Image (cartoon, rainbow, N blue to C red; front, top):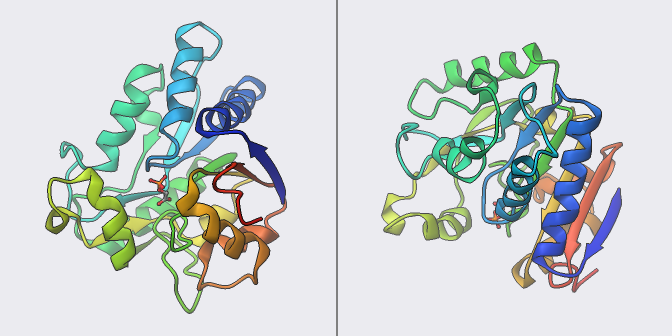
Length: 241
Ligand code: PGA
């Protein structure tokens, strides 16, 4: 585990974007594991800027997103499909056929999860997985649990996740209660993992996840045993470590 301390949100975003862009420069056909949420937005903004300057080329890149709400269509503004397109994909030259997110509008969980697991295998696994961390320690939508769920699966979102995500919806009641998410094995099999954490409300969970025991009660803690895991924290998120 490698911890990089950043001054603030923009410093954290630039440092993470540097690592992602180095991956794409070194390996133009890299498979990037993408994350949604507020934290990665600055990273995507930076990558778009470098792309527009001609420093980056995503034409051979494949992307695999961590998760998607269940029961929401791609066209919905709250879908992660929409989030990824408006914050990143629409602004760079990623080939549409190489963009992957779980099919949120398909309610057949078994079918969606099996197809996603197969897709990850068929693209050769993930080279660099970007992650945020939930205040409850979730990664993707792997919520605190008594076991680590291995494969892509359907989850019931915890109250704290619904609470945290309501800012993206008109009303809390509109937040979907279920999601499809890559499992812990899918994430742990990524060759490199890069997590970003920013802000005072992440300080406690950063300490618990990376300076406490490895436990499914804090899903992110499993990353302590990943062979190539980098955490970039800004000053506020690093306050307790
Ligand atoms: P956030 O979400 O970046 O919006 O804080 C992180 C997460 O839930 O993984």
